[in-house]
Length: 181
Image (cartoon, rainbow, N blue to C red; front, side, top):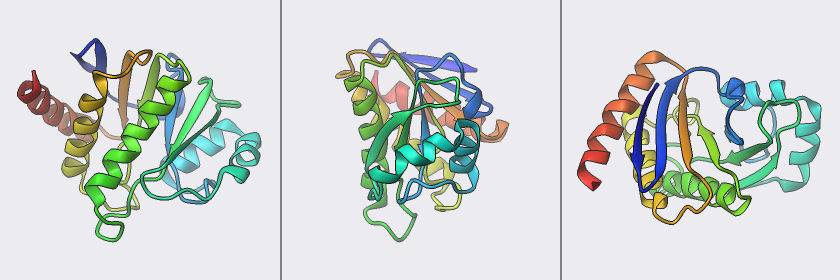
């Protein structure tokens, strides 16, 4: 795991399973508009959280690209799940603004709830087709812009599926942090 500090917020990159981040207050679900069980991250989170998550999500749906809602973690080791709908690349426009808004909204919700730590997957990069490097640039741009206004959130962890995704995110973050410090 690598980490960088920006405005008293530690930003981490690690390879792993987002449903097994027991030291985080919240994890972020790469949700679909209906907040239902799906493939990828959404499927893994719903399976690990159990059927009560589906019941809690039902009245909160649908959400639109760039929006986020918060629920309990149920059978997950985390107290909360923040469900974000990222854009479908090339369809939901402007994709970069909608993706940045999803990250920003998740951080805002976490901060409003007084949470200290949050874990993100690489939103929109799976079935939604967002190129990984572009998505990482948007994600870290949104996170670093939010850092100076976050009051309670002190740890933002990116939990990446593969080691190559982690390495790419580390390169992008190092480049971005170097340009904003």
